[in-house]
Image (cartoon, rainbow, N blue to C red; front, top):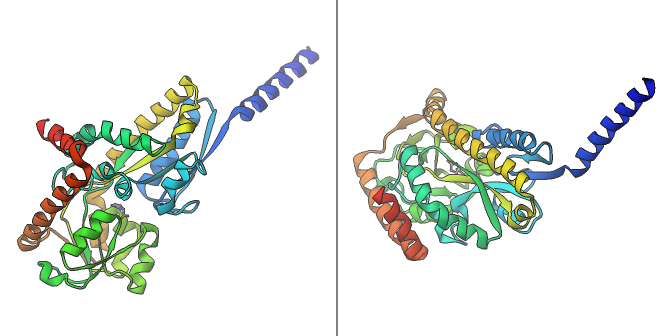
Length: 324
Ligand code: PCA
């Protein structure tokens, strides 16, 4: 009996060491604050992946650009320095214009419409990502984008010469159209940029304003709701293709569940973020009619510019979206 027990214990030990021997350890750099819902969902994703792959894939999340800075994450995953990572999709539109599908002003301004637009864009986006040696596992929208300023703004007459933090090429163009001076700054470095005067305005969701406590430097938020851009969790294509079918299915199940939960969380928090900005002394209001009219005109131009770079594929996405 004793021998049997020892044998059983030894077998159990071997099983444990075997399973840990085959566990693949994946570091997952993420670009935004550890306490942001995108990062919290990333941690839940890692838990689900461990569960659905029976411990075969063990992901460690590194939020806030701590392992690779936001601007370096895509390259790290493309080249296999990190097998998986998360980043803002339209930040990559300079390399593959189609990835700017979610940065088109006033085209899809609700979560529902953003989902419809994503459904139309997804096949083309996946094609483009594949060429970059990437596979998207899930995407998750930020709440709607509006403008932060340190003074009341009623029209572009008030924005001339303002130093504007942009997060991609499209937002830099937006700023220039308003007579502002764009400077690209990572969300992780935004507080510092505002504190040092490198930037004095930006476009983003209530979420990033809250994360970065921007009420310490700025006073006004205009709820333009111009677009709901997405983050995506991407995996290196070679790493993905190397997984067996069962493991892939486990990771994909975790991704599908997390994508849905993350999107729901974003919608749930959108209004709450505005309350927090107000509680901390900011004026949160709709953009006035003159400003809005200007923004809409610029938006139309930005969409036209995007269509020039995204070509027939871009037009096909917009047509499919409008047909639904
Ligand atoms: N926050 C991110 C991207 C969009 C958003 O709402 C940022 O400002 O960098």
